[in-house]
Amino acid sequence: MQKAVSRRQLFSSAMRLVLRWSRLCLRCSRRRLPRRLRNLLSYSRLLLRSLQFNSLTNSELIMDCVFEPVFWLVDHLTRWFGVVFVCLVVVLTSSILMIAYFCLLPLVLYTYSPAWIAWHLGYGHWNLVMIVFHYYKATKTSPGYPPQRKFDIPSVSVCKKCIVPKPARTHHCGICNTCILKMDHHCPWLNNCVGHFNHRYFFSFCMSMTLGCLYCSISGRNMFLEAYNAIEHWKSLDMEKQGVPVKGVGLLIGILPPGAMTGQSYYQTSPPPFTFRDKMFHKSVIYMWVLTSTVALALGGLTVWHAVLISRGETSIERHINSKETSRLKKRGKVFRNPFNHGRLNNWKLFLGVEKRSHWLTRVLLPSSHAPYGDGLTWDYSPQRKDLMAI
Image (cartoon, rainbow, N blue to C red; front, side):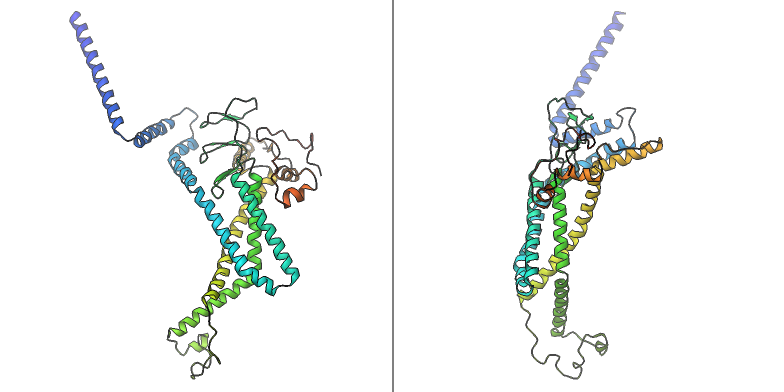
């Protein structure tokens, strides 16, 4: 018996030594690996373990875990390129302003009537002030963050990344790496999140920029056609100077003038000289019209979509959540009601901060830095009980 016990003790001590040796080897190998590779291995191990989290695991959770590296990559790329997108907005807008001031304004002053000159100068500069003001405020204004310490405000959940209570309408932004009050989305063109305190600035910028692009596109349509035809004419003249061979069918399709085949000159005098300045002027007009028309279509669609969401009293994230909740309750024979929808007019008044009639001018049609209604933590507005927005 004593021999058997001693053998067991020797065997157990030997196994302990082997385990200790293997642990030391693993630790040494981990220390030899670069820090980034070790972090990647631990993150991958955590990702695999999260697939077997609990019995509530579903397909959406598994897909989120599988695509978590992709989300991480997109978030970091968007964070890094945010400054580039802001610079791109500034550069493109400045290029349109240079063309407007140095190319189009002298032409307007010499050809338009005083009434049209006053209209273009007034509306154009008003639109420019609205664009610059709201873009600056949208980029520099904080969207709003929930307090990191304990607070007595009711919360709907706990953020699994910040590990802090989340008030209603608050969501976590992976790019900013923090929770945002009444988060709508993260806009790379602002390099900032769109939340409770800068949502109005974002929408006003989109509206002003859309109106400005439509103004440039509509008012510059005839100039664009003239510039395009002029450039096509220059190309045809360059082809004739290079001696492009033209068959007899050229008369039928209009490549050569009728007197060219008989040796007669098309111009009674020498062709007008097209200087480099003329070419740059027409190319600038084409560049301005194409850019403003494209932005007007793309940004106009985004502005209309956000206007619909504001009318319904919801954000882009809440639109997705409310749609899923509506379909879920519909299967049970119930109807979903958005608790933050107070009617179209009241939704717009709350969003724009309109409390009396004069605010439609001073707070909507003119630049205004007034704060939005509420603090973004509680949403106790009730037009039936407390109509602060009556006009």
